[in-house]
Image (cartoon, rainbow, N blue to C red; front, side, top):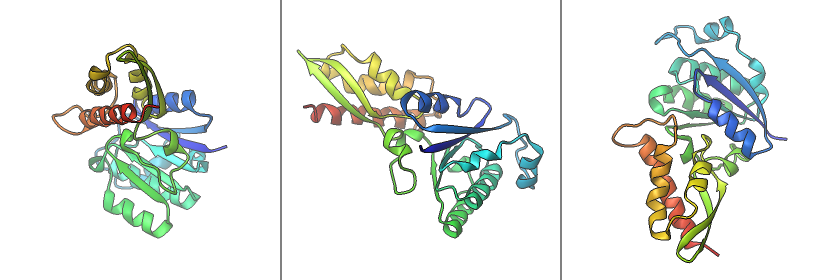
Length: 220
């Protein structure tokens, strides 16, 4: 059985845990970080030692870390690499991670490190499978009848659960209205993605809109 590690911080990461448990048979091991940490942590390794941090999380093959802090994420990446973790997925984007440092750790250890602003843009590679075969960039299967959506099956969905929410809410809608509505429903879902003028939740909405268009084009 595939073991997935999830490192949470405050409110971040818990919805992913719920979604993975509901929509897969993966085993999950977790570790928690405090919501409030210093802006700059001079000795992140020592800082982690002072916490009640569950290092058993590094027994996982694939880890998603919501550390959301450049110093902590780098320290976690080093520990993960030392433990032989195959893939480290870092949500939150480059502003929450020291990308040059993570790149060095990846090059030295051979551990795959993926830094993404939103988890619904994740694509499979040789390291992060089988997690990204079920969770990441959305893939849908749609059925229609008499000009309306009759069923939406989520083949792969966003780890936050938004894809499954959209799939339920959109049934019964007219086909022509479904793709834009799919994107809008994603933006109404209480996702943690940033909500500025561009990127973040808007990118997530567009990904789901395009996934719905593709599903309609491929309807059997």
